Length: 510
Image 1 (cartoon, rainbow, N blue to C red):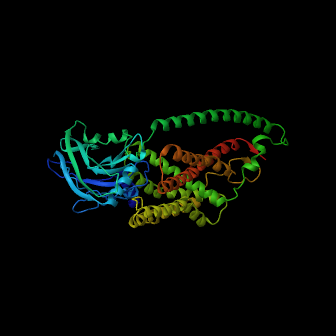
Image 2: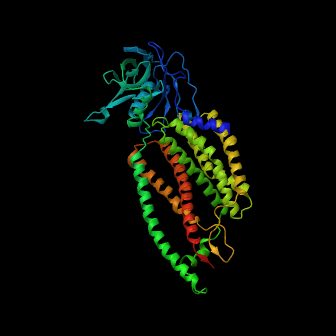
Image 3: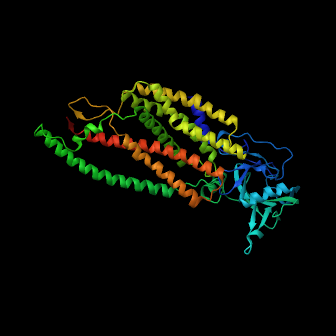
């Protein structure tokens, strides 16, 4: 339990950290600056190490030790050669002089053509800039110029002894033409300017919750979410009102019929009760779907709560990935308990096999997808490829946290009194679980709709391209849509179950 609490705390607090100090500095103090990665602006999953491009190298390349969420996010933080000491202005300082070979020029030109951006972290603050730009020729596209930015200007704001904000600008006036394949002598420069601000240290992250210009921006459209939720609630309320009025009339009719002739032919809800209360054909699979869907629903609720309290900044996907891994592990007991409760009530006997199916129903396809995509990332030498140590950590979490909690939940579930017993007042022995498997398909069909929308979004809206980005987008979106199928299918089943229980609790079936 202590390990679980520690992991949950790690999920909530994990951020890309530049230093373990209290972020207070004196004039001239060294402030940590890390370069992270580069990649095409329109392909969020395709990122590479910063020094895969022939930028200026520091004397000693030291990699920062990263947390689990940072590695999952594809972060690869390395010391930068820039010296941005606290309150020290600099003007056009030479970073290095390099002679770029023909191959290096071609690599930079490819980066400019693909709109590569770079990402850095300065005292925990992210900053982005572009590697270069294309100067379009209005007459001939073949005459377009590929310009490499060789001067970076850092504009930093501070409040007393703390860094508050940093912006980076690449000056087009200091650029070099890399349109031709030939050796070039290039001098890289940088400038630093400090400005005082009244923004407090506690408010410095508010900027990243509002801007939408950053690469890989995770913008939460709260208005659209609230609007959708209100629309769904209103429609549900209207539908429930209509159905309850119909049911009320049916209940009045049935109560009158029960007081009259007993041999009167059954109609309406009475007539179909034999079809409603029937065992599903694949009870083990059905129980596993409900268990996995319940776990994913609990995971979604936890993530939304953490987002509402402001745990996840828009740029900090590392904390989100860590939270997903940890909370999924901690909620596995819910899946085991729910699946076993259903399976035993359906008179299933091999509950161990049912638990194995529950554990693999979502994780199995996700693991196979990860293996394929990780192989693609390795081939492309991208930062999305997880190191062996990170994979081992995830496997240990699954082995030491997920599996024991799943088994404990299953042991508790198979011995519990089921709350899903059929409530129909019948003179015959009732079957225990209503045949509502169709409601799983009905609710889960939303996941199919989301997948088709993903196809439309990729081709019409995203601007993504390339085999790697296509593989990552459709690979992980397929897993997400599959998760929605399980989760919403479970919600549909439980809603149908409550509806049927309300009906047959009030009537007598022969």
